[in-house]
Amino acid sequence: MAKKDINWGELGFGYVKTDYRFVANFKDGKWDDGQLITDENIVINECAGVLQYAQTCFEGLKAYTTEDGKIVCFRPDLNAQRMADSCERLKMPVFPVEKFVEAVEKVVAANADFVPPYGSGATLYLRPYMFGSNAVIGVKPATEYQFRIFATPVGPYFKGGVKPLTLRISDLDRAAPMGTGHIKAGLNYAMSLYNIVDAHDNGFDENMYVDSATRTYIEETGGANIIFITKDGKVVTPKSNTILPSITRRSLMIVAKDYLGLEVEERPVRVDELDSFAECGLCGTAAVISPVGKVVDHGKEIAFPAGMTEMGPVTKKLYDTLTGIQMGRLPAPEGWIKTIG
Image: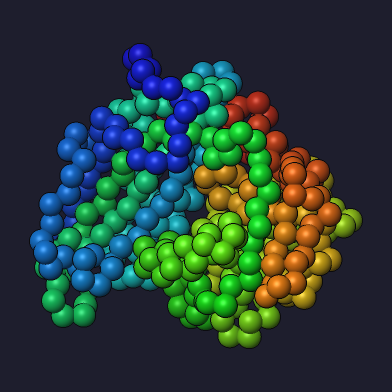
């Protein structure tokens, strides 16, 4: 299959229609077999549960071409399990993990000519999602659902090189104890939109959220987990039951320990510890690691010694090692790479 005539190097992180998407429907207590379709539009009732009560969740992962020319995905089983956890919390029917992975394979294979070539810096982004589709006027779960996956080619997250970010400690909360911060619910992201626009309007790249109960501990940003590097090279990540369990962050902790021989620690991280760290990064599917140059805490600037011009040395090793595993330049732990074509 010939690749599409796309200028891969000019792609941004936006939607580009591809040829196929996967759709499965839940009705009368069971899922149908699902199928690949070509129509990108969705027609649902005006009173659909997703429109009235935001009963929806989603995932994000990528397919890419490795150094030896294979098309692969990175740990899709973890995305499947995280979506299952989200569905259980939102009283939605779980789409089986094995069928989720099969659907990912089908979408990638059907859109193989949209998977960017190795070395382009671009990837095929996959968005699995589920929503309540039947009419619901009372406050209760829907009884019918759609599970869908679409694909879109996206460019490198950092165009023109890595630019360390400036974050601010947020006055608004991202999640409450015993709430939905640990799942990938659409409503979590809707709640963050006001705050991210306000951050941008005031010259910041992102918000760093703290725990809503005591406002003492670091949690995450609106769309990424956080890692810190101590001055003696230990990798530290915040621990809280309101943090979304990032697949990238969990993988980086294994890479740090097993590939780089670094000490790793997941624990509560206090705000007043920020100035004791040498490096900081945001981790997620889109960029793997985005370096943080400084955090502003209500006028107080906390700059990390790695500076504002490039990734710190340990962060760079983590980035290079994980992307090396993903792209086939380094051997992967068993089960991490799903080969599709």
